[in-house]
Image 1 (tube, helix red, strand yellow):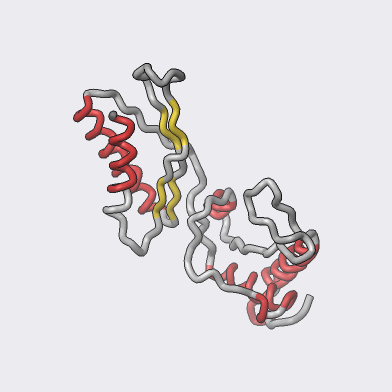
Image 2 (tube, helix red, strand yellow):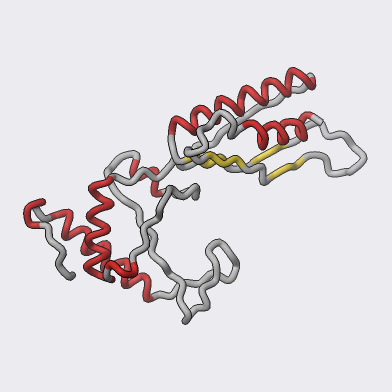
Length: 191
């Protein structure tokens, strides 16, 4: 009962204190407990990712989860322990580096095929750990094509069009060249 109430409260109230413009997603993707259906388990484990695009939103969401768990624990006379792993934070691209990547991509593949991502993705990326230490920018490189059928990411049939590796390497090389040039020398040129 306590686990089901906690799940309901988490899905109902975790996002309430968060501004609707700030993304925050909690998913309970794991529920485990007793092996037999006629036994009330001694413990139940709930697990899943928490994804936010802002450190303050993450901190506030974690505080809210802890308060909800404490409340359900008191109401149900159960002991609820909440643990958060390290997990990657949000990818916070540095605007100057974004512009360099944008310039490099335009010189390599042309502006007409570049798609700007209008708002932050709630995906989880290890690249965020690098950006905690150095200014940088992550970009997405399309890797599906008619040649490989375009299977979706994170599926058993996923396969890349290996031509995307060559294009990505050229964009990274062009970005490195632009980054190394004095700002006064930076112009759109082909690499």
